Each structure stands twice: as structure tokens, then as C-alpha cells.
Length: 299
Ligand SMILES: [Zn+2]
Figure 1 (cartoon, rainbow, N blue to C red):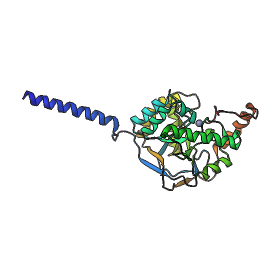
Figure 2 (figure 1 turned 90 degrees about the vertical axis):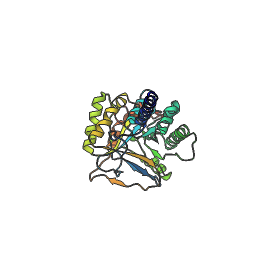
Figure 3 (figure 1 turned 60 degrees about the vertical axis):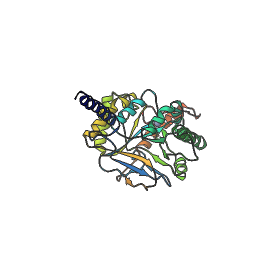
Figure 4 (figure 1 turned 180 degrees about the vertical axis):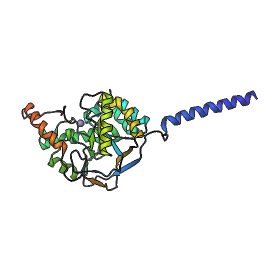
């Protein structure tokens, strides 16, 4: 009898350990999770995101694609990854190549945890302020750095042919060039404005309000921002509570479907750039602006 009790106790202990391990990795129904994976062929290229372009991905009502720009950052990206993992959510990280080079372990963790690696140049210059050759060089250097770090090798074309322009400052020539290389260009449908100083709670409320209004969309956040890292766990729980669904995007063979912008659409990012670029040009005196950012507008 004593022996039987011991055996039962041991079995319970083992079962307990096993369920603890499962709870850590499996996704229960109370988590936000991933509702579907959208496979996107970039053959011939495309540009999506209503902030800059008159079309976006064909998302259903309440579907959201989470994207994080400018990382990785050792200060904030680990918390972002932990929050995503806690809710079994997959996102896309548009990396700055030199940040990836500075913290390769975080990039590999993003890959290992099932996130999609997008590209966001090597040094985050405002490409519209560079000449075309300089701009292409920074983009290509970013592709190579991201792939080398994420996958251990870089081919002729980026492994994940997803690209976002720093500050949304595209040019017709660069868009045509990227599309000729079968690269998909991602703008955003809405953003967190997390380049502005806000408390985490203010940022969360802002994002929720914008999402409720838009009903769906490609959401831009920055995994380099404290307020974003801090509010993400609560935001993901709010998304679950309000019936939003996460769509993971990955490259592949399926021809993408697009939604058209409503009549009267105009580019919000062009309007911002029209205000900000003359100032930046003046500040840099026509020289190479290097890593010029758009601090008070859009990153
Ligand atoms: Zn950026």
C-alpha cells in the first residue's frame, strides 16, 4: 500500500510537471493566438498600407497584422517578445540592419519563436534625401545583414522579401526597383504614434481607439519604444476581449488579395513628408543626412 501511494504520488508529480511544460508552450483558448496565416507571394512586387498607398491587404473585419519597426533593441525587444509569446501571437519585425548586427541573438530569437523578419534598411536613413545609388546601397546592405544574422547566410535576394521604408519616405524609382526584384513594400494602415512621448496607458488607449475606428489593418508599432513594450501585454488582452483576430503574414506562393482605398483617399504620409522633408533638407545642408529620423512625425 505504501508503495502504491508512492507510485501514485510520483505519477501525479510527473503529470504536474508535464502540464506545467504544456501550459508554457501550448496555446489555450483564452489566449489571443493567431487566427490565420496569410501567405503572400511578392512576385512582381506590391505596395500596401492605406497611410501611403491606395490599397492594403484584404483583411476581414477585426483582423489585425502586428508589425514592429526599428529593432531589435536589448532594452525593449525582450519584453515585446515575452508579451507576444505569452499570448501565442506572431508578428513581423522590420529590422534595421545595424541594430540586428548589434544584437544578433535577439534576431535569432525572433526567428526561433516563429515571427516574420522584414527589412527596414541598414542604417535607417530617410531615403528620399539620398541619391538613388546611395539609397539602394543602404537597402541592400540591410537585406544582407538581416539574412546573415537571421539565417546564417545571405543570397542574392532577401529571404523574406518584405520591406518598409524608414519614415515611409519612398521614391518612385526605389518602389519600381524593389518591385522589379519581387519585393513587397509594406506601409501601414494605422500606427501607435509611439515616437511621441506618451504613457503606456495613453498609447494603449490610442491604439485601441484607432483600431475600433478602422475595424482592421496593418498596425505599426516600434519594439524599440519603452511605452510600446510596457503596454503590449495589456493591449493583447484587450484585443482578445474586443474580438480582434491576429493575422500572421509570411512569404510564399499565394497571390495576395488587396482591398482598395475608399473614394477620396489621399496619402497621409505624403502630407507629413511634405512638411518635414524641407526642414530636414535644410538641416543637412544638402549633405548626406545619414541616419536622419523624422522624430516628431513618423518613423
Ligand atoms: Zn523606422
